[in-house]
Image (cartoon, rainbow, N blue to C red):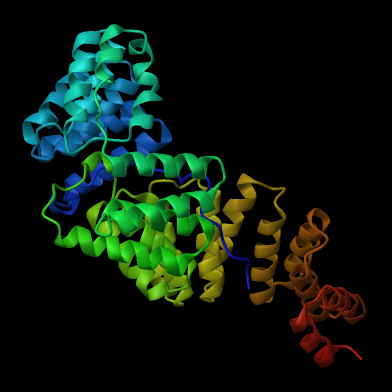
Length: 420
């Protein structure tokens, strides 16, 4: 079987997609497509094209603040703060205070210290408040940090003890001290057992430690508390519900694929532009051998990032596992066109050629794979099988023996069938 595909490095699109949660699915198909295209272009750094797409989406439905925030962010990247300010003000008209931080950034980049600090103060007093560290390290505010206004702003205690504890936890994690982070969280949760934020944070630490069952338990408890809470909904700027995204990833790591599919479906319903979630849901569906669903998710992702080699390979892998070898070959051909020195791509195509009984092509590809990576037992096994199928039993059996010596139990079966 082809080796497990990793999530594409690009997408964490640098993964991270800083997407906005709102009822995007309520926009209607045409608006949603413009939004998705805009977010894809934004993640690629094509800010002018992204702004054009968001403009189309706004022309079809101008009642959603996140479209204005997104377009405003594009204008900031394009060094057009005046246009950005207009969009952020429009977003605030729809949902008060939602774009205060963005307005602060825009005014700071326009060298308007007074207004920048004014909107920062408004943001810090709002339910959309982000972590202190992220504000102080935001390069948009570099020009403010020597001002008297900036100094006076931080004389007030804006953050609760719980928020400070979370900041300390993130510091410990950054320093590679997860045990200290867990200890701090345990103590804080004893004091505040109904804190969804602390439970989610402990879930995140457990996830990063590989304690997926504990992560799932913490995040589920946090989500239950949030569901029953009457508190204001978190900022749309925070992206898709952090807890559900983290629990979905925990289910995937714990091989609880059905639960992972369910959670990733909720994530994508909230925000269909959370592009990494398509690849992760595809992995979960593949774990359930729901190949059609897995392929559909990867193809959705590739519609917006068609040059992502990792996703192309992932799609080819699922075609291979579903025995659709012709489409698998198309994917691996594309991979090799992009990177003709990748042993995994030659191996995958060689294995696929073996399945389609085009053995001479298989021998060529598998031999090339071994030139690049001679220590892969599975490649030796497939090469041995391909050679035997061409009538070259002597060399084929020799290759199978190498695979066996490297630990391939499947090679033994072929040796018993074909080698004396």
